Each structure stands twice: as structure tokens, then as C-alpha cells.
Amino acid sequence: MAIRLKLLSLLFISLLCSAAHAADCLKYEPDTVALSGTLHRATFPGRPNFESIADGDEAETGFYLTLAQAICTRDDGRSEHEAHKDVREIQLVLTPEQYAALRPQLGQQVQLRGQMFSNFTGHHHADVLLRVAP
Image (cartoon, rainbow, N blue to C red; front, side):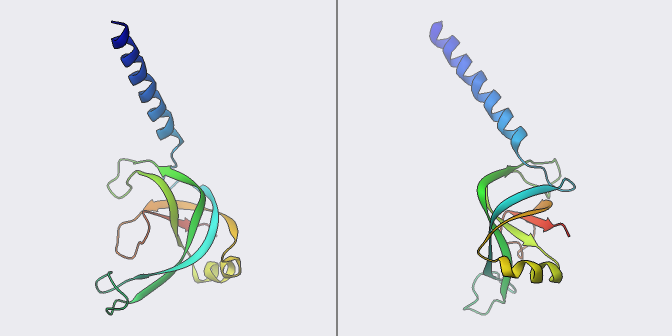
């Protein structure tokens, strides 16, 4: 009986910790979030096959944020916004003016604000993207 009570107690504590952790996860758009990390540029294969630049796929170069601390995101019940755990890399969605403004900060620590969304096309090379606020 004492073992059963201990097991039930451990299960209850585990469930509470999971619920608390989920509450700490960031929400997708329309909420605005602030994220900190190292700004860098990365290139991935694009059209037509999204597999290999060497084999003829277009190069897709963009700016990314490697987070100082991993985050998690909440599933908001909409199919296009999945929950993700241990997110460390964010693809940035920027205007041409934002690219120009951020280019001098490549390789540096930055804090950016914006709205997050979950990847949904082959052009999205990270699980989570941030539409950076102007």
C-alpha cells in the first residue's frame, strides 16, 4: 500500500510539472514574443526538390536566430500551429529593410520581437519562424 501511494504521488507531481511546463511555452501569433540569441545567415536547398543545391536546387539564404535558451511552443488547436519542444533555432521572416538593418549585426547577440508561427512549406527550414516586428 505504501508503494502504491508513493507511485501515485510521483505520478501526480509529474503531471503537475508537465502542466506547469506547458504553461511556460510561448504562444503563436497573434501574440507578440521577445527572443534573444545569436543572429546568423544560413543557406538551404530550395526549389524544385528541397534536397541538394549541388544537384540543382535553388539556394535559399536567410537570417536565423540561434536562441540563448531553448523554448517550447504551445499547440493552439489550429492545425498549422504545432507544439514544439526544445526549439533552439528560429527562422526569421523579414522585409528587405529589416534584412539591411540587421545585416551589420550578423554574428552578434540580438533581441527581436515579433509573432511566431509553425513551419508549413518547404521554404521553412526551421520548426518555428518569427515574423519580426518593424
